[in-house]
Image (tube, rainbow, N blue to C red; front, top):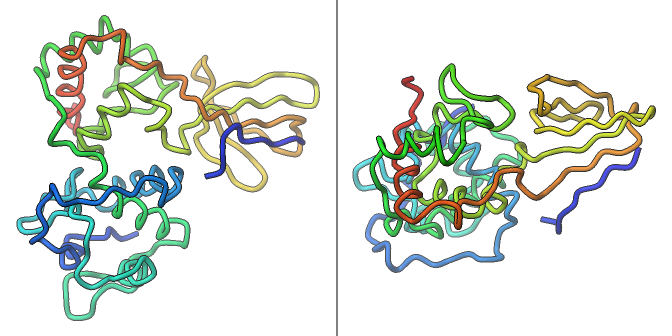
Length: 266
């Protein structure tokens, strides 16, 4: 089987107590950017892990706890990335910061995301009207043809029912204007060709050493054995179109407002 990646290389929550690590005296406008310092794949995977395990306490912007703001990009008890990994893994004794059940790839990704949270500034993103945004979502934007919210919509693209609870305004805005840059590694489209020449194209759901699970454009769930494939390609261009030109600035702001209301309550 030929396997290719068409791209350049690249438990417990961190918990409310990870706020014990963050310096709160650094103003947001003194943040440093980290362009090129961390692999984009690690940053996007870290955003996924953060959304699954940390956002409940810290919020999508890392500032839900009074006196704590991860967007400062500085940490009181960690002067290096290995120090930060150790604290996330082992916790801090006699505090509310518990040890975290993360593997090495998750630790690497979390550190990359925490270090770069301030690079996308949500404060400069315009948020419009959610009611108008829902109309655009269902109409001009045609988002429901791929995405699902509650019981409505398609499953071929990621489910958005809880997206407002796990993604910041800044990262959602990036998804609207540059979806390839904001795409999570797990959500990439894969192209698989079996030994008999059958082509399967769809969104990757899960993958291990021997198999890959995907959902195709007909919303069929497929589990393919890699040894049965003669070609397996991970596409690195998002199937989602950019709305930088097709929607006006106000329309993008309205859609963003609607997405931020989606917190699993529908």
